[in-house]
Image 1 (cartoon, helix red, strand yellow):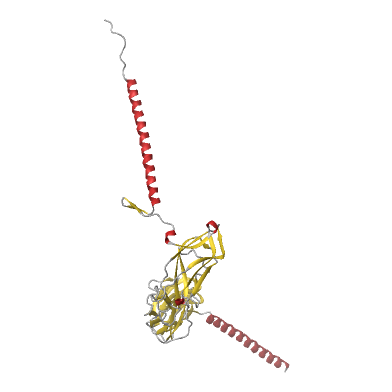
Image 2: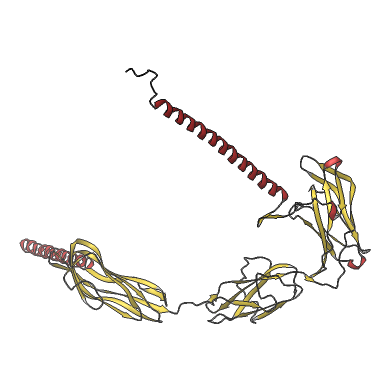
Length: 451
């Protein structure tokens, strides 16, 4: 009884051990198969996605996933895109078997686990989709197949955004951007871009580089500005549509005073030294004087003085003033003004209207003998030398003519001296030559001939 029980237990144990061995073998085989499946190589296409018309993009065909030394397959490019470039990778391709669209490729390489088979550059002007796919794949290593998987990259082409183009601006009142016009009403018009516009953003200011904000301020194509100040202004405009905002166009507008010949001509009554009059001999400047006038018809106008020669009055010195209610005006010169002779004129302005120019007033500012600031007549001005023409040659001043005459006289004198010296030397040279010839000739004998 006991023996039978032991045999039964031994049989059960043997079956259990056999079952365990079979299970281990099965797991080993399944793991080997799974490892081989996970390591299987493939050749796929990569780089698809979403693009717009006109855009250029690249899709690469790459082999990998296992170690291999030979490969083959076929590449197919389909859809709306055009092939811009198709370059083969670094394998050794069999004759007639390099990568191309629609053809089979076959190549050899040193053992590797990654290789770019081809690089394909695409672009499309049409909206649509397409794909680059790889099929018929075989990867092998030392004659053993290690992969057959292919792959596809898809692309979609949508319409490229086309914001509005440049707006062309013109003006009927101020047509030339480089000229000044005596008009304070500015009329501007513009043409819509070739691809249309839903609206415009406009700005009118004195800044050259302003860019209007991206907000529609008008849908019209004309605008009028009134009572524009004197000076240079800029009209900035950009347009928009469903695809965005276009570039900014800037149009320059120059507004100047308008001369009214019917207005009274300003009069500069005189110039007067003030108690604070001072001179600076070292710098050659004077200060502390005023210029003044009185003309009731110009009440409310701004009177402005101009000095000739220009550029000598300091910028901080005020040269304009509002004519008072009684018609009087005066401008005090407290800045240091360079001494010399000046021709002063005046005009009066009101808004954009300007009077004719006054008669010139000659003044003298001097630091000599304690200094002076006074009105002078044209006869008191320094007299420039007259222009002189001699033998068809014009000399700007008599002094210049005398310089030329003296220089010519000196040159003639030097030529005469050199000629005289040369003649003396020549005569001396002739005398020495004659004397030498006499010394070399045979002299007659003084002895008598005996017979």
